[in-house]
Amino acid sequence: MKDKILETIKSYETIIIHRHIRPDPDAYGSQFGLAKILKASFPNKKIYAVGQEDPSLYFLQRVDQIPDEMYKGALVIVCDTANQGRISDERYKTGDKLIKIDHHPNTEAYGDLLWVDTNASSVSEMIYEFYLSGKDQGLKMNDEAARLLFAGIVGDTGRFLFPSTTEKTFAYAGDLIHYDFSRTEVYNKMYEQKLNVVKLNGYVLQNFEIHQNGVASMTLPKELLEGYDATASEASSLVSSLGDVAGIKAWVFFIEEDKQIRVRFRSKGPVINSVARMFNGGGHPLASGATIYSWNEVENVINELEKVCKE
Image (tube, rainbow, N blue to C red; front, side, top):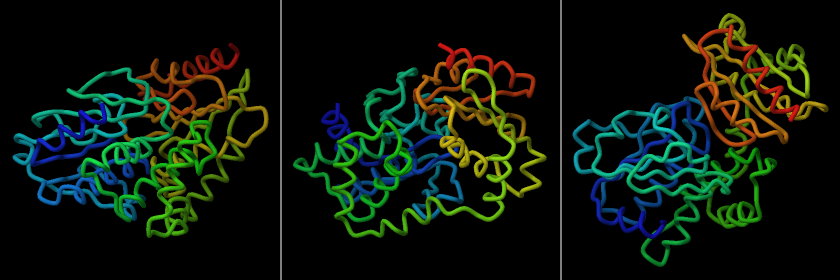
């Protein structure tokens, strides 16, 4: 499939790369890392990366602003997005051909070409593997692409602590750090927190609830977030903070945003993406997301999570 994707890329003059809404470092890393590789490899092609931005990730890259007509006859590549409903910028539908590159369970097999590897720690890892498979066919790596892919791998492995981290992950990261970029700067930018978010995390640690069967939960309504001057995205960044609490098997954050409630699941072992799929979501076995539209649904989510942890 990697060869087919490279052949397809070579056959198009305009390539537009998308990723998911509410981006994280892997979404940015894979999207922009691929863009940098392709720009270095095919300087005469028109290559763009688009989508809604997150200010906390400006340090990685800023997106391109392109007109609708740019999609005519273009190849569209979507990175790190399991289902079409989460693709940022709906213009992805208007290109000539669509490629999906992802590491989430392939519950929605969209696109003309699909490369899905659920064993990969991140799509950034997959993009580096794509480069390795094609470097003898013209693909070129540079310092900026390496920085972006390294950031994506670090983000989706939780600094190499998550179970998705493999020997291959370490090997690829070891390759990438030979390029000229500051790992210290990448870490500092990715993990520094504003004072208000630190204080919100203190509230989380003092107020999360313990339920049956090793389940924990945290509810963050809009009014509370406003009190800490924190956004829903900033609150979502705190979801891993309960991972060090002894006795918790899985936990869930409920974060209100506009007319919906973001649901963020994490687990130390029980497979929880099946619960996420019950509530308009999905994701990895141990890290998933969903959406509900009423606080009345919170108890149902917790009950389903308790069933999984009990089993």
